[in-house]
Image 1 (cartoon, helix red, strand yellow):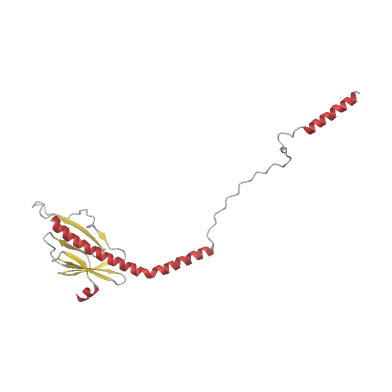
Image 2 (cartoon, helix red, strand yellow):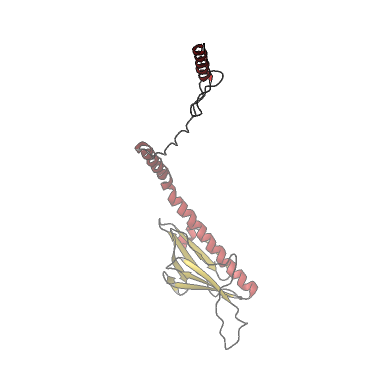
Length: 217
């Protein structure tokens, strides 16, 4: 009787242990009986690769084609810069002559034939004391300002009544009563283009000469 009761207790204990949940360290199956979904690992970042030889060859080919298309247009660009420089100098000299007559100042346009640049200064001739001679000084002006010729364009010659000047710093004066002399300034480009600006002291105006006028002079 006692042995039968013991056997029943052992059977109940084994049944209860079989129905008990698994240990906390072991994963439990969901009630539906499906296996738990596996966690997705983040995909590793793709490493940036360099250019291949074919890509480099194509890049160089495209660059060479673009350069060959642009190269024939370079002389035209330089000619446009030459025309713009001649027009700028012509407008500048006319402006200085007008400003001198209007404001009663003496303007000096100093051409640096070696560095292909110019400086503009002015003085008031009748304001300074006798023991202090007037000195040229810079004056801010939106039009009458220092400048330099663009790349590929240079001063070739300054022609005055005293002769032709091809180097050094050569001044051109503009007085309130009129410029003392007429001058011509020649600017050239590396490819052989040439422009000539004539300042007429009688009219106080400058202009760019045509090719026919340059040949006839």
